Image (cartoon, rainbow, N blue to C red; front, top):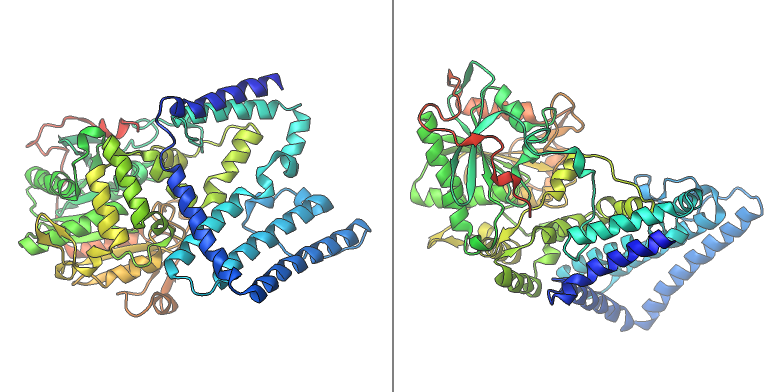
Length: 578
């Protein structure tokens, strides 16, 4: 208990430090205010019809009565089926005591009944616009996730056992980790999701051999060392997202898309974005296009002698690539001959739960915060992404770390996920307003440097990859966005989500993929007629790239004898911590 209280004091001090320094906890009040306002709107819709509200309350009461009656029968020795069951995929209630112990089983069922009732209340509320209903669903999901009995010491049987077995040492260790994680988050909780000591970028991550062949204020350009005698003549340029770092495509030798692409005989170049600070506050989308994509294209041509490239854009990197393609189409620039988009949105009508954070009030609050600093702290975006899947990415770690006092497992993907990056104020504001808030890009209303961006003028071949369980760029959103382009689009749907569906190597494939040619009709119709293929989509993509230009040339070393390499991959920008 003494150790517990000592560490609790440190955690409290770490939390209060920003308040003492007059920094506050950025954004928390705005988010809480929006949640309360949204849920009050739903409640008001129910209160205007007392009879309907009473019926809803009665449904919940009857559920509790069924649960209580079943529990009493179980206590008397009867075999009784539960009134309500958890989803088999729900890991919160895997411990056998949640089913065999009558008390914990009743607690679990009461929680499930209440949380599902709350979700129904949102879905059944009358006269609520779609945006408010979507926000209400999101906030109810957050509250339900937070209030699960599995998250509390006195209502989690597994934690209770651990505490008795260890005489509370687990709580002392957990409080120590809590203090460290609040300190690491500069006053806000930065949940550790993996054992960071087991990973080092450039050693056991992001270690595909290559050289940095160009550097400016925004990018380092990496060219990878060939492993084949011949390569395709047309080089490949990868434009990764600047939200998180490029090495999601080069996690380790077994999972690396970049290493695999090199092995297929591609000359691979990849942009590594700077982790921006206040010096980059005025760097906007145009700067990222010019100093990022266009600067890279110039260097690729200098090194390889090839004017045209195949390009890949991942997530927001794909959105930037699409913006660049529209700009280039307006200017008659044909240096990108074909483009691949990984889980990329250009139409944001169906952009999923991230739209919760993109209404006018919240964007204005973010802009005010960025105005003070010049950038959005990477932890803000990381927290938003975690909130999309709270029962997978938040609460299991709170229980494991702070209640059980256990270090999380070493997992490379979660290390990358925690290696967050900042966003420059001008860039992030343009993205939020033109894409999420106003959906200008898909409507042909967006402008960059006075040029109207019309995606229908983009006539080059597009390989548009979506993933079936994507919470960030939903498959439906990617499908609808395909219609914005003016040329041939090959839509491919991969299994799993935003990351695992992309990082699915042929040697150890976990998920399947579906093909059905161009995205015509609705997504449901396309899926109904699609062919399911076991394993990864990577070979299918490579054949698509090769058929666009099958010419081969001798392999090219980094720099090609025309540019002196600056340093070894992965370079220096990727090592900058937020």
